[in-house]
Each structure stands twice: as C-alpha cells, then as structure tokens.
Length: 91
Image (cartoon, rainbow, N blue to C red; front, side):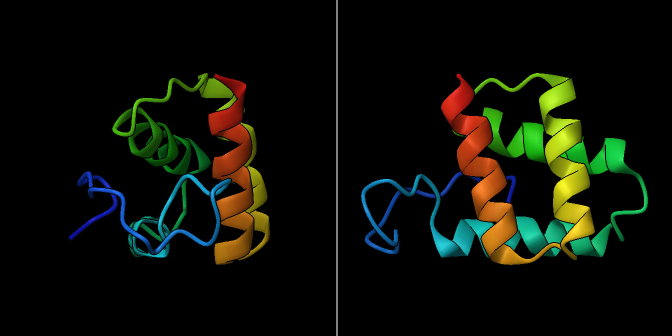
C-alpha cells in the first residue's frame, strides 16, 4: 500500500484532532524517502496528491513550503504529521 491509496479511517488516529492515521503517514513518508526527496517540487506534489486524495485542496506554494520543512527535519513523522495537519486546516 502506498500513501496515494485512500485508506478508510480507523481507530489508529491518535486523537480526534488528527486527520491522518499513522499507517497513512508512514506510507507517505516511505514514498517521500523512496524518491530520495531530491526535488522539493516533487515532494510538494506528493503532499498535494496525498491531501487531495483525502478531500483537501492545497496551494502549490503552501505544499512547497511544507515540503521544505519536512525535508529539513529528515522526514520525521511528527514533522510530517504537523505539516499535513496545518495544510489541511488551511482549506
């Protein structure tokens, strides 16, 4: 399973505020790392596709900014989750 595949929400959510399961985040992280996160634009596109697949719209600039922060943090899951939560709240 990759991050691009929609997964029915489960009780894996950490709390009601979290929009994404740890499984979804881990799959997205894997996709980002597999691509080597060489290109921030490609990482931003992955973030956009991930969120759009879950009903969120994301501007390219916001996704690019978030991808840069995720990249700087070494794609740490807590940072990835934080950035996705912030991007999703913008809509």
